[in-house]
Image (cartoon, rainbow, N blue to C red; front, side, top):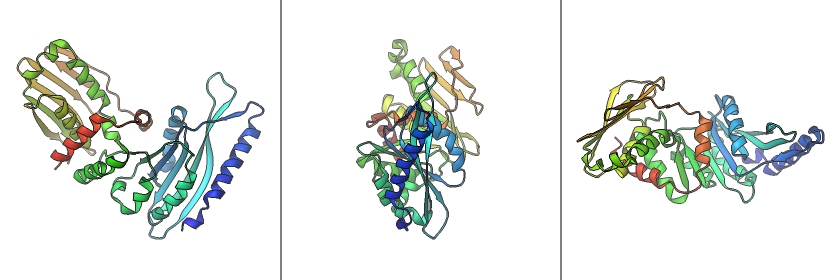
Length: 324
């Protein structure tokens, strides 16, 4: 039960943590940094590997970090520990530290978590929840936890129940900011397309386009491809036909190609699994840099977005319409 963890005891442990850090700093002092409460919900299995990602993230977005580790189990259980994320900037003798609270719970114990987490929020600062568990938005017992957040960040990569996921994200939108890291992975694709069609020579011929074809591999349409279709729908003239085409199989469905064609315009981007890429614009060819972004890079981008993303919301609405 929730009574197994007393929030006041955790807060007392945090106070003691800062005292100990100050005593260990040998007179150079410790700077306590916090710009938000960041709640990370992750499967307990593999959660230790998340540590490096969070350590990198704290340097740019210092937070009171609450890591909620969820493990299977039908009996409610909650345990906790308190620690610190510290680093020393280059050329400085003063450490910068963020506090981290780890709570381990069974799936049955999720219902007891919101009352504990609510008492641990950093006062007067935004609350962001990053969930790494597929389908969490659909669980009724998690609704009180999500209600604590000003922003919820999900990752629908590899999630097969596309229609359910899209509906859950749209249902959450009216009351808070919602982001999907699958949309964030499209940033480079959208920038390249936007840059080319900001070219007056191409923009003046935009009306010639007739088709937009999005190619993917996998047993179902990846959310990234649906988001790209939605973004193109809100960007291109309404007469352009947008098609999603499966090219082959992949363990994790992936977007690999977009082709815009019509009249004298031909635009094509292809990204291989190795991230080698080719871009062709009419008679010109290039090989832009298309690296796969790590979770900390994706999260840094999303944590920098503090207002509604109209482009994402428009793409989400269209993706919901065409999802199978």
